[in-house]
Image (cartoon, rainbow, N blue to C red):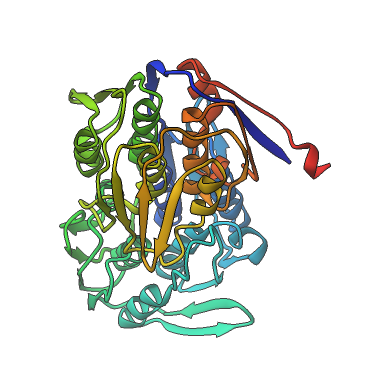
Length: 422
């Protein structure tokens, strides 16, 4: 295994390009199962989760050609498999996104109950209730969701919670259902709108993707698509926080600032100077950040995927901030590791009270999930001394060569073998 080592205290300066969004690429890759022909995707990030989804699709009979740079060609024309095996699904919750497409296209799907980061239960009952509304017969057999239907039928589906992956799964399934479907209380995240755009380009008849009401008129078949994956708003936000905590001057190019309005507003409230263009954001970190309260929520509220990173910045802010987590019940596992670096944080139910300290000190810490690992790297960048972050396979799930990008901004950071794992 490997670890990341950071010698903190260096202000970051320069420009960095946003990578393609993991949370958009994965559902679009799953949607290729619906297409009769090769789908060509550009700006696909080189991430562990993308490699896992690629292997999963290949196991289902999808022909995958890796082109130059960040391009993929996915051809499900001759796909015949319908069983998503445990060995692939257990490491990545997004694997459940093949459930809807497999069922819609082949009339049968067997998908292992998913894994991923241990940040909460995240049950898939919303997916299953929606597919049941569409006429699927669903059973749980030996740890697999088994779904069958000769032809899905359009239906009105109300989601008890606006689940992002649930909305996406049901959009893909309803695209090939007979008749009209309406998804109410749908997730409004930009990645949902992106999937709607891709499905529309494939021939689906979808209105309202990216709002809480999505209308879908099922069609007989879908064709291939050429598409460039949108930039990653969470990676963009992470680099903006990196600029803030190091008192740096960082510009993220090739991003979509509109997708980050809640994060940008909180960074401004915390005292950072942000300059925004159509596809770029520049942040100038203040000498001392100010405390700012945050409450996570579904888009356009403050994203839960940015909570851990923002907490790292509040750990060295002047004053006391309260960070409330409303999405996942177990997403404060990074708190104990930030405390090892000298942070003063107390968890009270679904909230964390963060009392800013003068500075953090480098320490050996352990990543517990994807976004927690990013928060520890941010803490290490701001800290005096050396920080080592172990179990970094988490960060490779969602950040493309993060140590190289930070190094190009002047950070003293590198990856090395973890002697504790030998």
